[in-house]
Amino acid sequence: MALISILLQQIFKKADMDKLKIGVLGAGHLGKIHLKCIKELEQFELLGFYDIDKTHAEEVSKELGVKYYSSRNELMEAADAIDIVTPTIAHFDSAAMAMKKFKHVFIEKPIVTTVAEAKSLLTISREANVKIQVGHVERFNPAFLAAQPFIQKPVFIEAHRLAQFNPRGTDVPVVLDLMIHDIDIILSVVGANVRRVSASGVPVISTTPDIANARIEFDNGAVANLTASRISMKNMRKSRFFQRDAYISVDFLDKKTEIIRMEEVEDEKNLPPFAMVIDPGDGQGKKQIHIENPEVKPVNAIKMELERFHESIINNEPTPVGILDGYSALEVAYKVMDQINENLYHLS
Image (cartoon, rainbow, N blue to C red; front, top):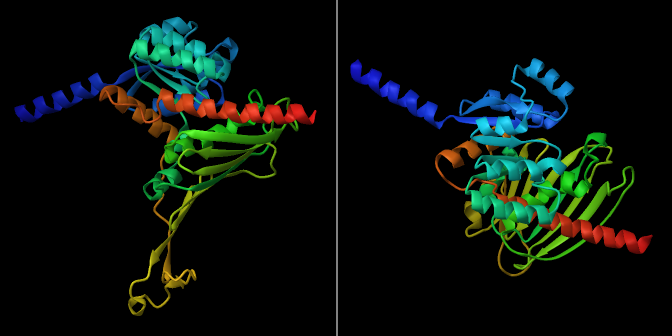
């Protein structure tokens, strides 16, 4: 019994040592979601949050039962890690300040406002030698997680991310608000340098483009066609990946994944009674069509990305979506926006 007691004490002691003190910057819509998620994660000790709007912060503090820090500096000094969920314009200053205090940083997408800021943040992160994770949450979407094992060297990708109008997102162009999710996903699965970007878009309601389309070509020959809109009549978040002998469909919104594969038929006599078989007519023989719907396990994507952030810190491993990922997605997003602005200039 004494041995068991000692072992339990060691286990609880290690759990306490692995628990990280974390503070949240920003208590807006997404910030409140992060606060609620962190409260439920045993890996973290939620110290509290800071928000520039004192009246709103006091309301959130009372609603969630979380301490409100009136000083951003005081919160950073007390924490091991900082979760930045402020408006994008405040990302750079907050992240740079936290890194210079040698705090690990989780920062929502887009990582910062400009590519120049992203480059500067890269330099600071190398000097600070802390863990940085960017909140590209769709990497942890259960539908995408289910599809990942099947996505291998896609040649053509088509993505549609459509949303009904919401004034809350109009502080940034639709490319940085919506399309950047798909840019990050595509960069992660293609794994090649971008060769060329062409794009078009138009501001319909706000002062920046509300709908945009981009074609991204890669050095390995892969091509991606992306459409993003925040003025649609319905919501849609779907991507399709086409590769040799396979087609993978991912519905990020409804959390569904479908895999359609084709395999060469070696012995037609042994096929199941209702097998789907086609003859491509190329003289290479018939192919059988397999349709699969892999299990999509229900997960809270925000909780999962925060858990992985914790694991990276404790185990001293690279974060699953690192600062270079955030930088690359932002860089491509700006190439898309530059093309859109150039086309709009010629049309004016």
